[in-house]
Image (tube, rainbow, N blue to C red):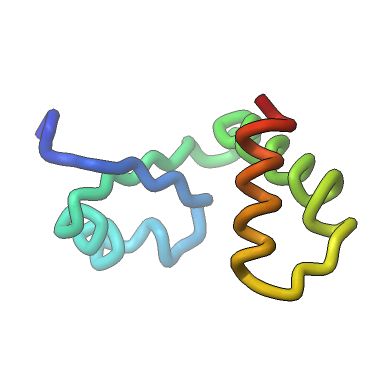
Length: 83
């Protein structure tokens, strides 16, 4: 299976993400599911922390008049401010 998958998708443990049908859909589209173990809160901590900071420091402080404006500001936040 190594080399077959192009991207990794990391959902929570919701029942829709655990179903055979959903996992087959991912596999058919060259996606690999990276789901943490049950009752472990640390598997996604870095990602959750990043998105919290993005929302608190940028998204909830501005009003975007266009989708393009939002994309530009979020890109700048990630590439310039956050790095």
